[in-house]
Picture 1 (cartoon, one colour):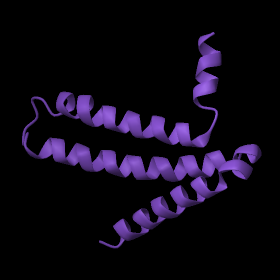
Picture 2 (cartoon, rainbow, N blue to C red):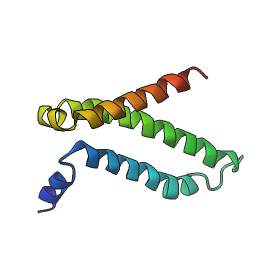
Picture 3 (cartoon, rainbow, N blue to C red):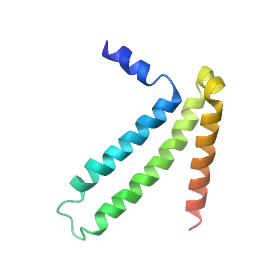
Picture 4 (cartoon, rainbow, N blue to C red):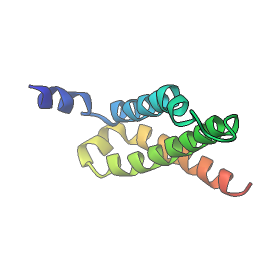
Length: 99
């Protein structure tokens, strides 16, 4: 029963993108304060982890847009969403590499 519910939740790429975004936000809200406790230079640790989380978000979106394009029926139906996510994430990665 639980597997069937999980399959229904991740049955389109838009929901997969939203789950990835939710996981990153959850890491920012819960994980960053926990990981930055008792660190030397405690002011800088949360900002560093936040920057890493944003990078993981963008790279994750790029990878997910490629992987969700491999399923042909999703690609036919959600090609515009996948293309927009791929272009925006790719643009952000290219721009951030030139700083």
